[in-house]
Length: 134
Ligand code: HEC
Image (tube, rainbow, N blue to C red; front, side, top):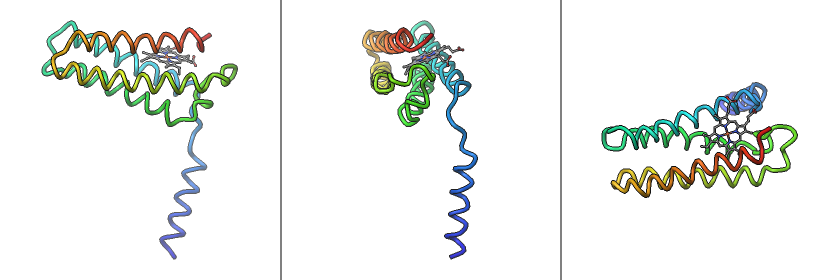
């Protein structure tokens, strides 16, 4: 019984203090993806040990893509763009897919394939920005 009450109060507190995903979160997540992309770029330009730059950068992007997929995309999008949430979800899924592929290709030493994935990731960023960003 005590445990149940404790559990309920924890849940209540959680929902009281859970902050809505807002513009500040969105911009900071976007900057994290940008940082991830530049790590990946370093992976192509420098000798990062055993693909470490690809993994580090890729994981930074994956983290955000997951946030985008699990956050209701409606909350994620700016007020006037909420209608486009399905499109946004799809972009996040595609990013997830290409990043995983990139890490795999890089680790297997298939750098040309990784470069192709990088290109596709950037395309996803860009197409969402062209459509949704003011
Ligand atoms: C689901 C749509 C969507 C996708 C996909 C997306 N972005 Fe964004 N991005 C936005 C929106 C919307 C803004 C504007 C945020 C705002 O001003 O509230 C933005 C803004 C940005 C900014 C500017 C942040 C600032 O400081 O103002 C950067 C950098 C950025 N995105 C990087 C990326 C990168 C890198 C990717 C791909 C890995 C990406 N974005 C994918 C929607 C997206």
